[in-house]
Image (tube, rainbow over all chains, first blue to last red; front, side):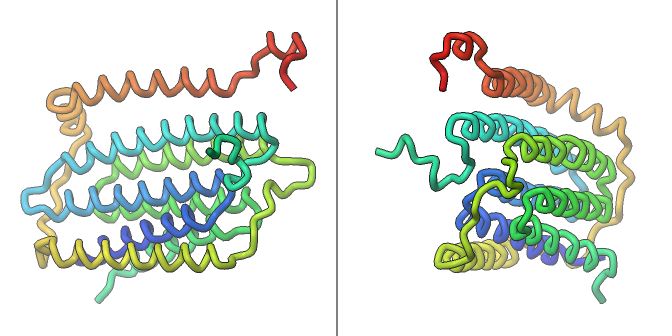
Length: 102
Length: 174
């Protein structure tokens, strides 16, 4: 069995990849990919801590259930917003969607 | 002695996550994201959480990635490429730097602050019944709120994505 720290390192790596995508990518769908990767890193942490806590607790699993459902909802609304932005502007490049810039 | 399954799953997760962000075609990127999420589900099985893994596969790979694929199909132009993504220049380097810094800081903080138990406790078989009981008893309010949220999300998504026909017949829309 792996030590807990290897799971923590893996989830931090997913967080780092997600932040890299959020900072450097211009396509709105790729930004959504990055958010999903970050959420998955958090879920790995929940399940790993639930597994390694000394009386095993079920709350980690329940929170992951809610987290996955919330991520699915976030993807639904985000993709609908991307569709609307594409219909209005003809692009989903987030650096050209600057009509509201003050 | 590192576990072979853990190493293989880590390579799968990290590799396909990077591929999802760096693939030239967005469709291939979505497929890479699906593989990364399947790898996370395998990690959940490794941690003894089979039901979470089933939920992960059915919701993420079955619903979210398919939704993303449909959206990519809808926003695709005739030319194939969706947006002209700029070459990894200053922004890419800055993103990699910031991401590496944050990931190192978070990993270091978690490893230093968490009291690491040297051995994982004995794996208890968790029945689906126990999860159901805990969802229906101590988490029942959260479950109801989640249901309301899903309903609101579906209605909101439909409202956002529907085409306004009255405006279109008037000719006021472009």
